[in-house]
Length: 290
Image (tube, rainbow, N blue to C red; front, side, top):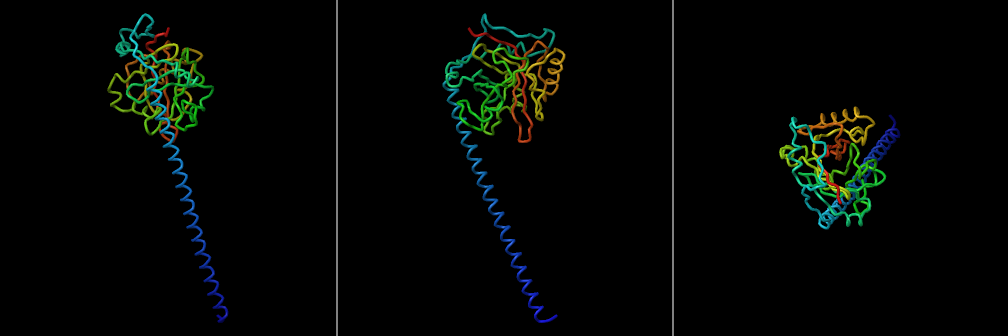
């Protein structure tokens, strides 16, 4: 090999090493810049999440403290709904002895005309006004005062009749990590919740009536549209629906069901993969408000 060729080879090798070094440096810089972007976005999202939670906590507290709620004992307007046969074992007869809940909606409606009710779920933090609008998207990212908030609010399916309950009345909310909205609904899957039978009751008050609902099924499931079907065209389909929901329950409840029952469904996300935490209850007592 000539002396000139050796020099050219060394020079080429040195150039290649410099290019390789430059590529590594650029790659390192790119990874660093990407890390900074990811970190910045994460901090931004975390800050927004924290801010949304604070606003929702404050709004929920103010709403609960300023709204008048009272226990209602049975009176001449109290109606027992679809009692089970005496021969059947059912805690229905114990639950109907409990008081109904009555809420004053004047202030709530003045703040938000979309208000259709108030819901309280025993053994959880769920104790909020319910709203309803013309779709199921708005209150996924708007609070009760209609300000933009990714924590959303508790809302009724737009397909439901809030005054004359459908066969299946559906209520949704986000499952927040700080236990607000339906964040505490996952409590229903714990033995401590289930073992206290006093928890198996949902009370809901609306501007027209006060109602009580007996829980008959709790479970987790992948996202689907079946359990959030609001009504059925024939009794056979509805009976199949009721049997399916009760059969899905991860624990056993004493409640008996038939096609004359109206039910309440609560649904929220369990995780980021689309799974849901679901609770079903049947109407057992109501009182028309005068």
